[in-house]
Image (cartoon, rainbow, N blue to C red; front, side, top):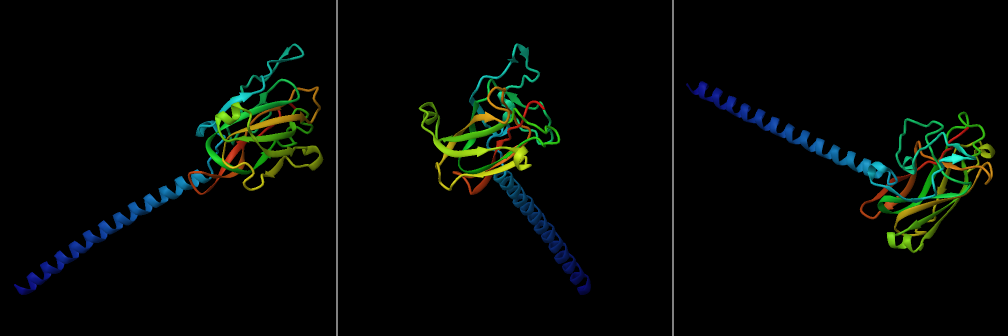
Length: 235
């Protein structure tokens, strides 16, 4: 009788322990899932493309889109939104926005207000376009802290960059802004001063791949954001 009571007591203890272990494991698993989700979201936030249409960026102003050249209808009729409609898996000639003339500009409202520290400009490989005459050559970047500042043209010069893949044999350039150059910005304007073929040819700006614009968001720690690439519409 005593042995039976002892066995039942031991079984009860073991049952409680098993239940406790199951509960503990469940809590650990849920905690792990929660932490992993937090880490995943944090990772996405750090690498979020603040100039992506998907994340809330908008084209607020731009040079007129080219509909024809010398009386001939343009083969590419993409809107400027293609510049921020990023597709990492498609880097092909023609995925671009053609604009009128050898000079042009594009103003983007970023998804969040950030402090910009630099960006990377990437072009279609030279194997696709050995002589990218319509690709932007020299361009200025200006940051604006608010819509009011943009309307008043009260911007801060972020810097000037030069792209010449035929001379450098590189399709990517990295450009860093001095720390604290402009403080917080919500808008960025890319002003293309000329193209690789000269001002007599129509320039084209496009995006097929994101380029990192490093910066510090005002609502979190250091993150990666992106400005879309500029490529050429034609060979």
